[in-house]
Amino acid sequence: MDVTLRAGLALAAYVLVLGLTFGVRAARQRAQTGDSGLRGITGRPWSPEWLGGVFFVVALVLFAVSPVVAMLGWMPVLAGAFWSSVWPVLLGWLLVVAGTGYVLWSQAAMGHSWRVGVDHGERTELVTSGPFAQVRNPVFSGIVAAATGFALLVPGWFALAALLMLVAAIRLQVRHAEEPYLLATHGEAYRRYAASTGRFLPGVGCLR
Image (tube, rainbow, N blue to C red; front, side, top):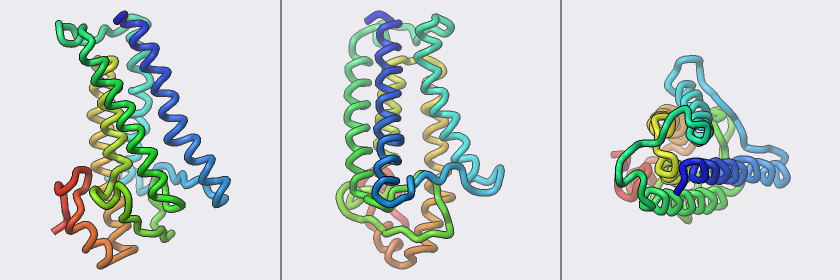
């Protein structure tokens, strides 16, 4: 597939996915509760929690830039028989669709507890049903799957840097913001849940 067409379709899909998983979701949350659920970057500057939020925003920007620079020819995609074949495109689209669907399902399961960022002064319900019965952070699992798909659609250094930064951001956010918040808020209930439920994959990363 032509690089320009491939990158253009990837950029259009990226905008659509962001709109569905953040824009539409936040608008629906505000309509139902009067609160969009968007907390943004939290924590003290340069703390792990703060860095997680900053890395997440930078990763989103890099993912948007990646197809643009490919279309402009400023940075070619990775060379080689595999990267120029149809397989990265097929696998990429599969991951984008499956990952986005998993994110939307997980967001729906969260209900009014859905948040982007952590407000340590509020209390939200501990959700353990639906996809949360298997993993504690299914939204992030779906985001990484979709992001990996985007990196395959336009495989270049910008996309690779974005994927690595996204993974680092999610680990910082979960380990230094969300898990401490949930432990402080829900105590033993969260400990029991986390002891038998994986962090991002079933059975992997259970709290002991």
